[in-house]
Structures are given as structure tokens and as C-alpha cells.
Image (cartoon, rainbow, N blue to C red):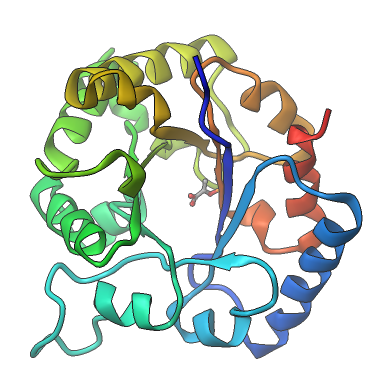
Length: 247
Ligand code: PEP
């Protein structure tokens, strides 16, 4: 069975100024010099997409609106992201689900809008601490997956990021056994939806990934890359994660 090329993506969240161009230049130099055994993506705030593009690193977005244009002050559409050269957009990150009350239906509509423009949607799912303690992890992730992937989604336009909410920005990570269990369930759902092509959908793990734990987490079955927050802000830290894919 062929496995998809891993995708290591950095989510800069609401961090970064024009001076951040130097981090992209540094990352680009490290990859040029030492290589990367995976696909590399940075999702900066929308204000930096244009400035960071064209430097040899794929640049994506952190969100898009479900409509392509119209009276939606402050929002950014998938067609605009495509126009800027983006190939990826994160949708349904837990911070957006929590801070902007995004439901599975909204996430699905955003993923659909992205895929209609030929963008790949990185659809985020993951349980809260309370849900994990109540033994609801697999049910929560299953209903998020079922509710957030568009009916007409194509394999090529879909990446899943499993990010336990309690692991994001906390320094805590699940055990590799716990990661394996959730990723196996996600893979089964993808196989159910896409048939054997479901094996080609990348499932990223996200939540306190850093250079010191990347190799172990990336070696878990059905983990096809990482979605990285804090450790993606500095080129050196992020490159340390990328090297998990160097033999
Ligand atoms: C994230 O926000 O997607 C994330 C995984 O953050 P961190 O790596 O900082 O936990």
C-alpha cells in the first residue's frame, strides 16, 4: 500500500509581522541545504500571505469564509486565497470553533468553499479535556469528521488534522497509543467515505509537537504529518520537526 507524502504545516495563528520574512528565508535556506522528506507548509496570518509567498515554501491560510464574495466585512474568501497563490487552508481549528462558535456545518461549508476553488482543506478535529476524561474522544472525533467533511469532497482536497484541544499550546501530548487509536478510527472513517482511496488522505497530528517529540509522534501508524503552532514560529524549531522525516 502506498502512503501519502507527509505534510508538516505551521500554524502561526495571530503572530508575525513583516519582519517574519526572515524566518521564511531562513527556513527556505535550511530546506535547500539539507532537504526535507515531507511537504512543508506555513499558514501565517492573512496579512502576511503575500509577503511570505514566492520564497520556496508553500504558504496557506488559517481560515476562509464559506461564501466566495459579498457583504462579509473582515472576512476572506477561498477565491481570494487562491488568487494569492495559496494551495491550502485550515478550517475548523479548535480556536475558531471555540472563539467564533464555528459548528461542524460551518466548517463543512468552509471546506466545500475551499475545495470548489481547488484548495486543499485541512479540517481540524479533536476533543476537549473534559470529553477525554468522560471517555467521549472517539465519539466526538467521529461526529466532527462525519459532520465536517463535505459530501462531495475529493481525496486530493482533504487533509484531516487531529488536534486534542487539551494538547494545543500546553506542552502536553497524548501517548503514542492514544494517538494511534484515534488516527485508526479516522482512517476507518475515511476508508468508509472514500473507499481504498481513503488511504491517501493525510491525517496530521497536532498539539504541542516539537523537535524533541516529533520523531516519536510521526512514527505512529496513520500519522501523516503534523500541524504545529508555537514551534513553527522560529525557522530552527520548525526545521527540527521537519527532520523527523529524514532517515
Ligand atoms: C495548533 O494550534 O494547531 C497547535 C497544534 O498548536 P501548538 O503546536 O502550539 O500546540
